[in-house]
Every structure is written in structure tokens, then in C-alpha cells.
Length: 205
Image (cartoon, rainbow, N blue to C red; front, side, top):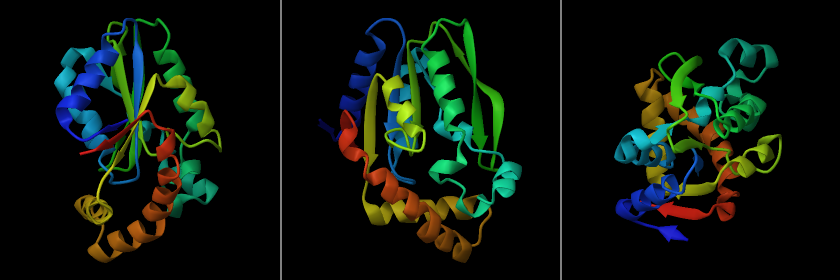
């Protein structure tokens, strides 16, 4: 299924939230592809019916990336605590009064524990990230925990420019930002693009 307008997208999310109990919607896509924007829009429109729990909260800390020798590949599939992310999604499918989730802060490039509260009465949890549909390196545990998965894609030139501007916004020089995007982010984007066909909905906004 392909959705190309925001109204249809919001309506589908509302239907998911109205199914009874709690549902988890996963929104995947390449770096800079618009998945975070789509996720925020859904949560904003649904208000108290939804909470946003991004995958990025499970970035490994900078000190751990350095210890592992992976700092220059930050954002790659093996620079996240995927088992911790799967455990959180499993808890979110349970009946706890409130579940606390971590949040990634770009200004310090570190995850912050317990930053997002998800009360039991919230019917829809929206989680977004690059690797929700990846089928190896531990990420295969994530897809079965999602009630529905969307994949967001956009114009490739626009996506790359967004990424470069994002890195500049958070303190990198234009030269460093472009080099990082073309070396690291684009490698990750290729991994993610190979998963698009497994999504329930392809989003083009």
C-alpha cells in the first residue's frame, strides 16, 4: 500500500489507535528520509492517544563507542543497543502503569534514560528509526513487535541535503558534514533501503 497525503496517513494511524488495547506503529526509512517528521506529525495530530518513542534513544554512549572502536561509524546498525530496544518494545506491549523510555539528545550526542513516559492508557506507541525492518544482527527481533510498519521515502537529493544541514546545525563544519554524510550516513541508507519492500505501507509525502 502506498500513501501520498498526510490526511490518509493520520487517518490510518487513528484506525490503529482505535483497535483496542495498545498498538505499536513502527516508522522506518533512511537517514534524512522524513521518518521522524512523519512520526512527530502523527503524534501531534493524535494528541493524548499516542506517544513517540524513537529508536535513537538506544544509541550507545560516546564512551562505549570509543571503547569499541566504532565512534567513526556512529549511527551504523551495531552502534545501538538493539536488545535493549527490543526489551522496551516488549514492555510497552505489557500492562505496566507507566514505562519510561530513553531519548537521544543531538546537542550532546548522548542518550538520556527515562526521558519519555508512556502511561498504560495510551493506545498507540509510535516508534521510528532506520533499522526497524532490518533482518539481521539482532534487528530481526524488532519487526515481530510492531503491529504495523511504515517506510518513508523522499527525493534522494533532498534527503542528502537535509542530512548535511542537520550536521551543520549541530556544530559540524560544512566540509565535515558532507564528508560524514557521504561516508557514513549513505552507507547506512543503503542498508535501510533494502528493507522497504517488507513494510506494510510505503509513505511518499
